[in-house]
Length: 108
Image (cartoon, rainbow, N blue to C red):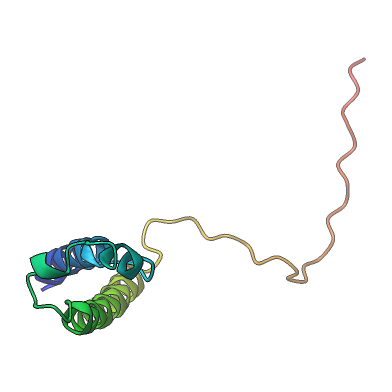
């Protein structure tokens, strides 16, 4: 399950990147008035703004969902592993009896 989710996550991420790079910026319409490629669009003269924006938003939402699912899976795995084999670390600020300083030994 985790492997499938990870593969979907990577593919959706790459798709979002590709869709963002395909889309035109706000200033791209100024070039169309000087004979730019309005007649060369794949999605008609209105452009692909609506379609690509909706597709990008959907894929971005799917990307966030897969990110959250992978985070939940990672948390569950970390809790299942626990602290097996790890040394116990003392908690800072824990009150313990003060130890007497050890005097250095003198050599006669």
